[in-house]
Length: 414
Ligand SMILES: Cc1cc2nc3c(=O)[nH]c(=O)nc-3n(C[C@H](O)[C@H](O)[C@H](O)COP(=O)(O)OP(=O)(O)OC[C@H]3O[C@@H](n4cnc5c(N)ncnc54)[C@H](O)[C@@H]3O)c2cc1C
Image (tube, protein in one colour):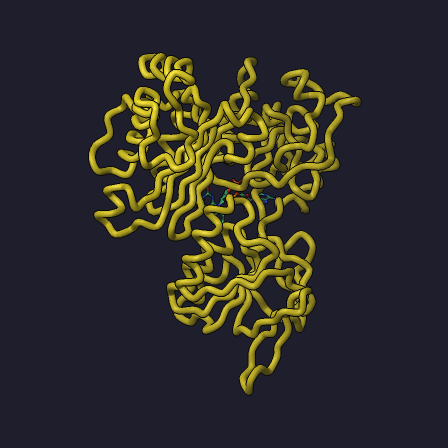
C-alpha cells in the first residue's frame, strides 16, 4: 500500500491509515499492588502484591487460588467470577457497582444466582491490597475505602481496559484522543482526516457532536474543527471493532460515506446469559410519550423449551411502540444471545412485531417464544384483552382503542 520513506527505512507512507491497537487492562490506583511502567512494557520488579489479569489467570488452572478477590464487578469481572467459582475458587467480587451497564431486573436475577453459587459481592472502592496474617493464616488483605476488608490468596484485576495508545505519539500526527480513546467522527475519521481508527482504541460517544459530524465526511482537518474532549468509554466488543473497521475502510475507498448503525447487540456470558440491544425501557420513556409505548414481558418459566430443559430462570423484555416498532430488548436466560440475533435483525431493518408474528418458527426453539409474543400483540389488539404473558403491557380496550387496533391490523399485513 505505501512506499518506504527515504528518510526512515521503517516509515511507510500511504493515502490512508487506520489505527487498531486495541486496549489493555486498566489497573486502578491501589496501594500495595505491584506497579507497571507507563506504556506497559512489562513488570517493574518491586515489592508490591502481585496480581492477575484475564491474561494470566488461566495459566493457573492447575493451581487456582483457594480464595480470590476480583476487583471490578462489570461484565468481565462477573464472567470470570462465575467461571472461577465453578472451578472451585472461593470468589469475592469487589466493585463500586454490580453490573452497572445492565438494568435492575437483570442485575437482581444475576445477583441472586451468584449468591446461590456462593459468590460474594463487596460493594465499594478498593484502596489497598497488602500481605496480611488473618486468623492464624497468611493471605492478602484487600481493603475498601468504606472500611470493609476481605482476606484472599490472590487478586485479579478486572476493572476495565484502557486504549493502547501510549507509545504511538499520536500528537505528532495531530490525532486527538482522550483517556477514553481516539476521537473519531461517525465515518471513522480522526482529527487528521486521512487517519481512521477502529476498535477498542476508540473513544465512545462525544458529550456533544463535533462540527465535522454535522458537515459530513471531511477531506482535510480544519483548524476550527471542534473536537469535544469529553467522551464516554467506547464499546469494547469484537463485533463493534469489526463494524468500525469495515465502515472506516469503506469510507476510505468510496465517496459515499456510511455511518455505523445504531443497533449494537451486547451479550454478557454469565449463566444465565444477558443480552440487550436498542433502548432500555427507561430510555424509551425519555424519548417517547408513555402512551405510545408498550413493554412485552415473558418469563422463561412460561416457555416450553426452558421448561423441557429445566432452565426456567430468565425473561424476555421487548420495548416497543404501539405501532409494533421494536425499540429495544433485554433478555436474560440461557440462549438469550441467540434470540437477540433475531431481534437485532428486526430492529436493524425496521421490521415491526407483525413481521415476527408472520415468520414461522420451529417448535420448540427458544425463538418460538418471540413469535408467540408478537402474535399475542396482534391477538390482543383484536380481542381487546391482554394475554397472560404480557404483564407490563397496557391493555388495549374496546372501542376506545379502535384506532390502535386498526394500526395493528395494518401492521399485520404490511
Ligand atoms: C477477557 C476478555 C473477554 C472478551 N470477551 C468478549 C466477548 O465475549 N465478546 C466480544 O464481543 N468481545 C469480547 N472482548 C472484547 C474483544 O476482545 C475486543 O473488543 C476486540 O478484541 C477488539 O478488537 P481490536 O482489534 O480493537 O483490538 P485487539 O483485538 O486487542 O487487537 C489489537 C492488536 O494491536 C496490537 N498493537 C497494540 N499496540 C500496537 C503497536 N503500537 N504497534 C503494533 N501493534 C500494536 C496488539 O498487540 C493487538 O494484537 C473480550 C475482551 C477480553 C479482554
